[in-house]
Structure formats: structure tokens, C-alpha cells
Length: 111
Image 1 (cartoon, rainbow, N blue to C red):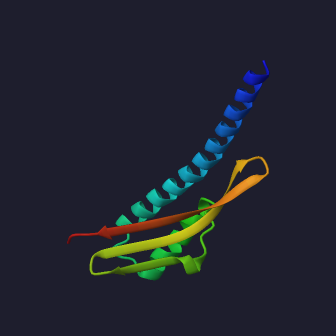
Image 2 (cartoon, one colour):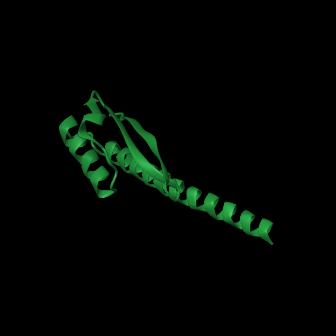
Image 3 (cartoon, one colour):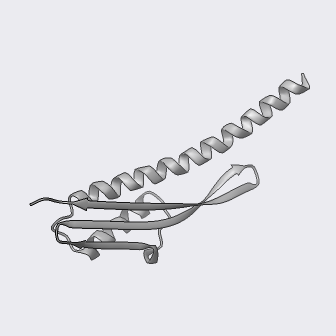
């Protein structure tokens, strides 16, 4: 009986950690996808406009992106966006770890 309760407790803690980590990664991939989509349709925009849109996307998704950790280059039918940020993930009750994320998007348009 005790052995079963211990196994259930370990399984519950593992599910807790996986859920929290999965949620953070889900947010990251959604943000990356939004940046990719925005960059694909930003050919007529300036690098500063694209930069502002990326920061808006991050704010809307509660991604803690510092403007100094965002690089946008735009010109000659090529747009490149690189952003790095960190998020704290609660893996176990009272134990969290900081996870680093990078978004790197390159879009080349042919015209």
C-alpha cells in the first residue's frame, strides 16, 4: 500500500513538472510561429516597425523579452529576427529552474 502511494506521488510530481514545462514550451513555439508569420508579410516595413511588432507579440503572449535581446535586420528581400529570453519554470513545488529560449527566424522573399 505504501509502495503504491509513493509511486502515485512520484507520478504526480512528474506530471506536474511536465505540465509546467510543456506550457512554457507551448508559449515559446506559439511566439516563434507568430514572429515567423509576421516576418513573412513584413516586406514593406522598416526594421524598426518589425522590431515594434515583435515586442508587441511578446507582450501579448506574456513573453519576457527585453528590447536589448532583440535583433532585427531587414533589407534586400531578407528579414532576420533573433530574440533571446529566459523564463522561470516551476518543476516541483518550491523548486524552479530558469530556462533560456531563442527565436531565430529568417525570411527570404523572391520578387
